[in-house]
Image (cartoon, rainbow, N blue to C red):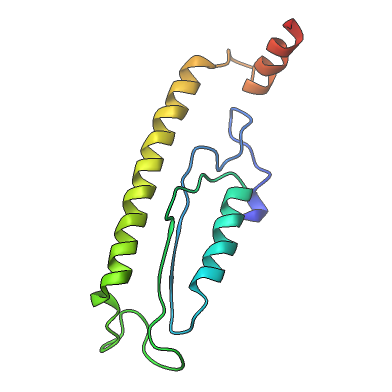
Length: 129
């Protein structure tokens, strides 16, 4: 993702503009919060919007053992994980919907004429004041 972070869309905005990001961490060792902090910071750093409770995780038993969907792991039946995954999912969908409405509204309001970009329009508006 960082390799593409300098790419722009046809409006001279980050290609990640108007997107919501979150993460779901699974495994059998503690580190969910540390991984989520790093991933979510990295997402916002390149342009994603991070809603509240945008992470969830399941760590299982500490040490060697089954992973989330392995037989007898209990992963898919873990109430805490299922509750947090549900909150995360709804928050991500709601944020994505709000961003979609915002981006659509901005595109209509600042639709640049052919050959012009939003950056060109912004510099023209700044020059007038």
